[in-house]
Length: 134
Image (cartoon, rainbow, N blue to C red):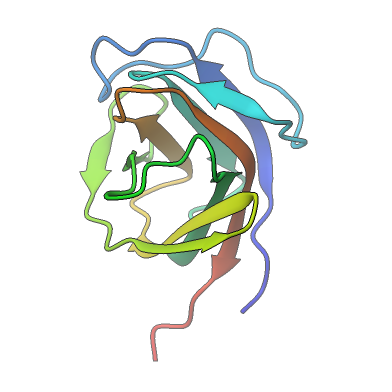
C-alpha cells in the first residue's frame, strides 16, 4: 500500500444537499484538527482518480460515537455532483483516539466525508492509501 496525497481540502460547515454542496474556500494539503458538527463535511481533491483506496479517519475518542461510525462518504468526478459510496467501517478505539477505516472505490478525483452523528466529532487526521484489486 502506498499513501495517496490530496492536493487541497475544504470545510463545508453545513450541507443542505450533500450531493451538491461544495466549500467556498480551499486549503493546502495540511489538515488540522476539525470539529465537525452534524451536517458538516470535509471536501478533498486528488490530482487524479485514486481508484480503490483505504480511507482512515482519526478522531478523539471522547467525541467518537461508540456504536456506529458517524461518517457517510461521497465521491465525484466534478465538484458539485456527488454519489454516495457504500462503506463497511472498521472501528478501533485506543486510549485518547478512535480510528474509523474503510476500503472504497472512488468514482473520480473529488471526495467528501460527511458527519451524520448528532454530536460534533473532532477529526484529528485523515489518511488515504492505495489498495490493490488483486
